[in-house]
Length: 114
Length: 118
Image 1 (cartoon, each protein chain N blue to C red):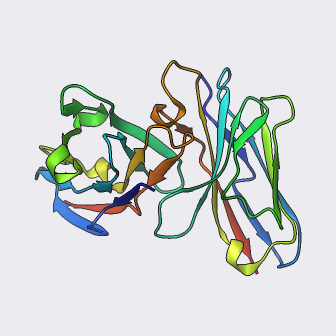
Image 2 (image 1 turned 90 degrees about the horizontal axis):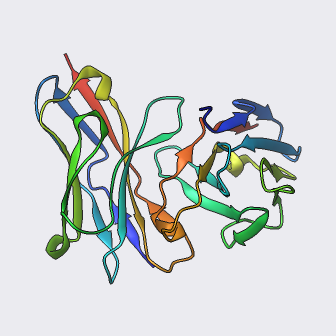
């Protein structure tokens, strides 16, 4: 079964600083990969997704992520963080043929300092 | 376009009482998911519907949980009786039909129902 690890439970960055959130997955083949963001009291919103092709994918709100097969990673990045980016971020993996099931990591909470 | 609607947003009940959650997916979305989200954790799938058919309910605790999506549109998740450990956020999500396999589809989430069992 696939699994997802987000090693950082909580990250604090200053507004305007760069951001990288880590995601590692365990799966035998190339999975479908997603990053979602959840603001307090709201549902999850898709930031970006990777299925195949270019390993650097662009998403909404200025986010990007890079798929590295050799490291089984799909890290999320943003060059300059805004205060409104404070939220919880979830990495998810959908394994081909696994009955439509997506496995989510436990999330990373982002705090943005003024 | 309206998003996924869930009600109630909050529910407080005594243990051993029944509770029900309602979800109305985005219009035209044939796939509907119910997730459980415990504090500090990611969502865990309880059940997935393709139209009115439950195609994956392997993680649904069937002794106390039940779900239905009778006409392939809105859905209800029920717990009877509720236990203290059921306190969590229950998320509903939906996906449109695409050529892509189900595991590759973007999911659109509702705001969730926060359940507190006392």
